[in-house]
Image 1 (cartoon, rainbow, N blue to C red):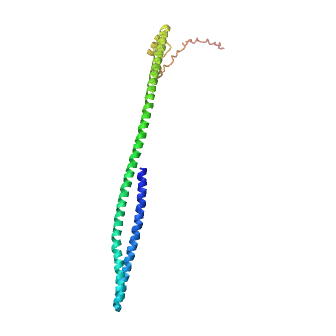
Image 2: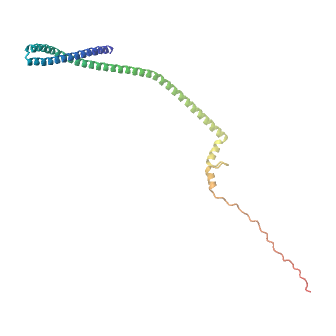
Image 3: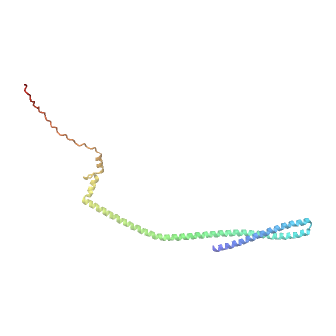
Length: 220
């Protein structure tokens, strides 16, 4: 690519030189045509005055100019054709160089990606092995904890049977254990109507009134 870029640089310089020469040739050719047109006017003026000798001399100069024009015109055409071909060649070469540069960039990127994938795969193998070992260790710990929990539960059940706590728990759940009322029992008690306290009447003592003797005075 470096060599192609250098060649393109030289081709652009050559093209610039050709363009400069073509423009100079165009100016020279236009100048010759202008001179020829002026001399033609001068020759007609000489003929109009009857000075045929001067007209002939001017005609010779016109012939020289037309010879130069005839020589430079195809040269200018060749320059334009060569310039057009160089433009096309440079553009095509530039496109090829750009395509090649993009392909090289793609190859570099793919190479980098593949190296990264290889590194990840290598590290991933170690990481997978480490994760597998950690998972096995965690599984063993959970198994030990489950066994320990079962031991604690079994010991508790044996202690409850020894002290009768398991039977008390069953009686309590059934609402039979003395001194323990279930929530339903308490709710039923709260809903029941209150009983009026029993009132006892005291016995009445009946005392018959005894006649009170009345003292009578003797009539005088």
